[in-house]
Length: 292
Image (tube, rainbow, N blue to C red):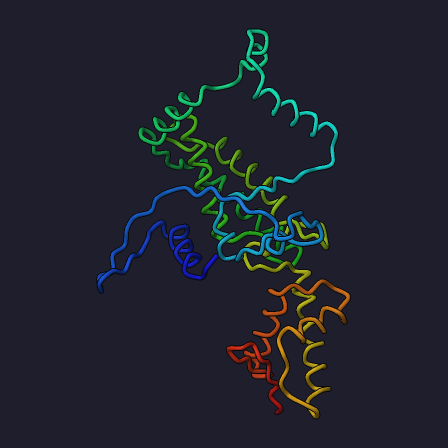
């Protein structure tokens, strides 16, 4: 994904507007829409040792704007395979009266479309006092859990997601008021998605920072060790030469480190060193060590 495409999506997903500049005229259009996206892992297979960000290599600033992120993985389960095979085969089977009796819960697609269109057009749910208070308490509880582990487990963006999900659930019920049951269902969906997309593979703990900042707390510790290793190496080589190739230094750190060093983690460490005026990085990614 190009930087220009990413910047456009940032604005659409955050502010629900789209800015267009043509012939010196800049206009801002409304873009009130829902976005359903899918992504495949970069290695063609999901790596359980990596985070969601590392598996699909998509910017955390973009991923954190999605309300719900679910992982659809191919689990090695005979029961799951059997149910999937039956579902696929049933799509090609001739539907007899006997088969239809087993699918009495199916809803006609045209009816479902009409139902959704009717709900969107005629219902604009609003929070009542009880549901608003339940949302506040749920948000505070998420923040409290993070504080117990010395990290941040919820941001205002998560609260906005819960509000949108609660309103959507009320709209599906054809209601103009958001009740406590809508908030409870929104929390259930959010927690289920969080358990899948924000799980730290190193600790097995849920860490919202994976999506919000691109790094987990365990990655922060690895970054500190990486900063120390890079600085020590550059100092040891300063008498011979002060310039280093980006990829050569990255390969060296990966070989000498006991932890997994991703490109994003390495770039973050280099930015920290550059901010501290320890190194400078050219446009061609040539790293120069600044001798004090």
